[in-house]
Image (tube, rainbow, N blue to C red; front, top):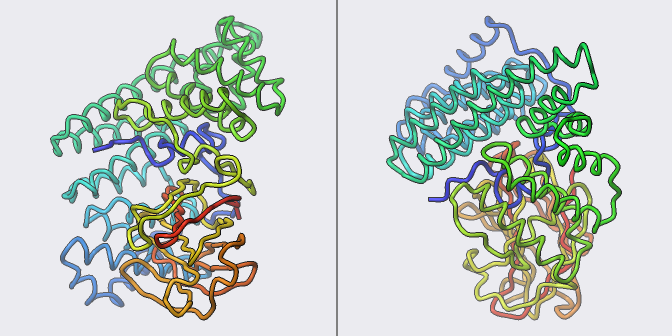
Length: 495
């Protein structure tokens, strides 16, 4: 089993931020205070009354998860009723935790914390504690591990080391219970990182006192700079400190980054410096520096060619293997594995030069699609692409494992359609009018709807089964039915 750190620590994790200021995206919407305890109790009681039969009848894990998802969707419709929304999300996360379903439980908690001013690290630890008691399937353990990793990163970034240690203990206990050697190895390594983060936090407090007396002190600048960059990922505030620090090589690299330009080769060269430095570190600092190098490599990659491009792609693959926590050998990225090129917002990518061209084996087997991955944490996003195929074209959007399909000319009579895996199917009139010409498809996700467009015209919608959360894993895929096809100009746009 591949025990990766978290979705944002996977292949595309190295593509979209990886420092506290960007990986931990800030909510732009103003949060409100949670209802007082009396109002919370009243709403939870009301939820229990309205859904009494459903709650009583939800005995299996699957039934509890299904009801939790229903309450999450209902909570999304209660935007003007704070107490009601709070109660629905609270009940949903508890039901999912009882089912051992960390992904659904945190779908509720993420929505709750996005709307209300709560102690998110402590809430995450409480929820994971409840979820741990109900873990059964390996897939549930995998989601549990991912959420532990994410919650630990958030706790360390917020300097909640008591919570981080609690989360680490939960993860180690879950790995031992599972009896998975790879999982235990990863959890033990993470536990070491949490202890090291606390030690670094204590050292930087003393160094801050020194800087209060002498802001130019090289040793104190180094200690605090290393803490900010290599522990909590605050590169924006940490780089100037490293540039005034006592470590000459670090001082030089940090100074170069502060004055760096947008030139692709210059960024790649700077990433090389961080890459070499990472090899001299261990544990969390090594991982953080590797992430920083990946950020710069990703920014440079679209403009690179030849051997420069190959080198960067291989290093990104190697960094992904480190992030995946499985110790596997680095895998060279293929043209359809372009996660590293996805940068938000509003970026267009030209794949493998002009296009990815080939023949899909089957439109009925999503495992044989051309898949592009990106787990950017957005509540709403849009992706689009240009495609051509001899007979018909299909696009698939996968959010947290749930797939949604859109086709043009899929049926023998030329009709198109929208269908949700294992859920529903709906035909739409219209055909692929020019199969040999480029056609533009677009899919937009907003709140609870997915909207599909073809050549600039909206052609249909379907419901979003589960709301996207800050940790939603997103994939988009393309195919045509046993016919040659080409894809180009893929883009993802933040909304």
